[in-house]
Length: 631
Image (tube, rainbow, N blue to C red; front, side):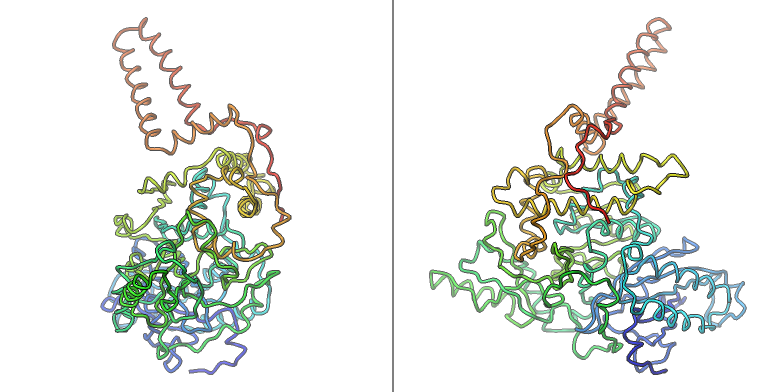
């Protein structure tokens, strides 16, 4: 094994990995540089226990159905010094007869392999662009024993990316909110709110490159999220690790009955954060020895850094501080909690405040552990057990029901994930631009207000304005990708500013009172609200599209209802059926009567098309946003 200096370990790229499909062993690592296991060679199949899902993530389900594909995935850290590991994999397959050197274990007609980059920084699109070229060249060699090009890739990437400040244009390469809005239209705001509520959201489509592209593009709408908000988003342990650790298995079995403790259930509760070992690898687990010293200079530093905190422990409540006014009740509650959670270090008790408790459950100075800007962004959504998994392999299915996972935004291509709808709060069908929510209460919470519909329609109109002109399409500021992100930044800034105002019920009503009530008990809101953000004083409170109702709002509401609600779809289908029946009846009755019926049908169809299409409101009828954010 070649030795690498300390400077090499500080590079943004950790490993270059080749994953292949073996006809007997399945997906396995065939090459890694530097070796994934420090004491093994480049061609070792061994993996750190924390990365045991790597082969299945790099070589996705159903890969044989596509000639090539691209996968984004996240891996958990190997030690306390590491953060989330960002993986980009380029998959290709080639006919076995085309190989110049055919090994004995190649028994199928095609050879399937993926070339992966494991990185410390979330440069998905940039890494993909470089990796696709190298993967193409690697396959063109038609001799997979020629690994010198992969070693050169490792040195080149670390040399070109080390020490450079990464800006938005590099981070967002390949992530187009414009295309997403053209596809999802008004529903894009529902997805935005779903993630703000920290719900269990599953994206589903095939192939994988469409899946991960849609998911990561939605996350790019949250200011600072891609750059700094995902460092704690992959803190989970493989299933075998839970079963092999008796203490963890015991605590998990006890926690199945008591997943959370409400603030209202325990009087005199004292909240605090405790550094534990939840979701961290065991001390004896093998690791590559890589550290993340010097990582911060790879990303453009924000104006403010949040204090250090534990990486993946949830906000915890120490059973030893539980007190209740009646002594007997206190002893009973403490005994029950101690029995349930085993009272061992690293076994957290989740504290979930009730919506009626207002701000009473928020402790001043809660820390997110993320690098924040002057507004306290990115919001600490993907922390404390809330996972971001752009692609999930079937072997990770257990994470959907893991008691140590409080929520997730995940992507899947296997139909088994979609069939088990009870494990997710929302399933996003990317192909048909559908957002399926089973819980009626959650649907009510996420229903868009009139101001929200104005905002969404404002985006859609600006995005679709020049799309028919091949020369102007996507070239201007308004309606472009950066402009769209600026509008969502304005939306989030205004929401946060409104939440800080006294007597803010009317300001927040434009965002939806049920939504705001649900958002205020989430972890990301409580952490953000508990800290001071002086820069928020410059943000104008109130919804960017607040204002009096008009006829245009009525048409917009009807259009949205017909397009998205089940009842509206049934009405639309019934009207279309009626129209067809009218035509058939008109032909049967005769020319004279049929002419009158055809006219009636035409009038009905014209009226329905007015509802089915987005309201034709000129931009002048909408008030411009109170404040516009420019890059």
